[in-house]
Amino acid sequence: MSMIIYPVIEIVQGKCRSVEEGKVDKALFPSSEIPEIIASLLDMGANGICLIDVDAATGKGSNFKLIDRMIEKFNYVNMFVGGGIREIKVADHLIMAGAAKLIIGTSAIEDLAFLQNLSDTYGKSFIYNLDINGTQVYTHGRSRLSSKNIAHAIQQIIDIEVGGIMLTFINNSGELDYVDPVRMRWLESVASVDFQARGRIRNPDHVKEIASASTEGLFLSDEVFLGKIRIAEAIEI
Image (tube, rainbow, N blue to C red; front, side):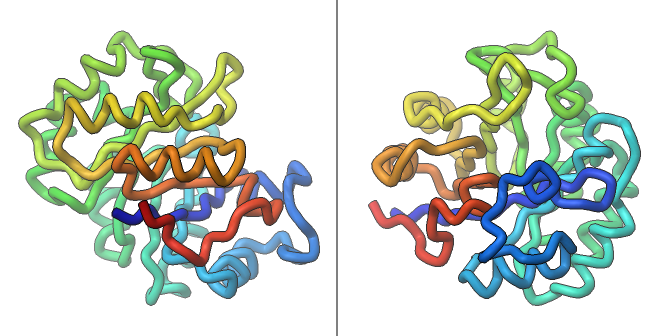
């Protein structure tokens, strides 16, 4: 099988968080403007781009108009969009605008009716995301602990069509943690859908371990911006 690496652009107040925090190779990404960052990633061979609206996820604002413009500008690119998508009308707009897939967590975890509505309307056009720390699940941009643990959160979608399940690995501070291949293999054993992982990586061998756990897509932020990993080639296992 093959696993594709997707770069993630986390957007805070219209800016790329990795660039704002200095987690970037200036030779690779000389500009902090998001359209130019996307163009640079595509020049590096990215097979798709993931835009995460951190402000919308945490309830501190919205970068909706910016994301809308990016989907329109790069309409030839597979664009994954997530962060604060908690209304069907917002999901409708993004899909109609041309988003390849929506990444939805909080509302799908907390509201089964909303989750079923998403499935009935979009089916495989959305990915069910779980921000996890051990067995715990967090919502609202990793700021709140859910009453559902990972097993419960996955069990509720066993009979619901989704376009995949993403495990986003976080630490006690709510920051991205290292992807756990063991947990990805466990996911393979309990759900028969496409699997995605988001988090940090240690080295190329770690990437191969993640791919060997039937992981279809690996979503990375800082490693891409610092030039620590090549995103042009799928990892073949």
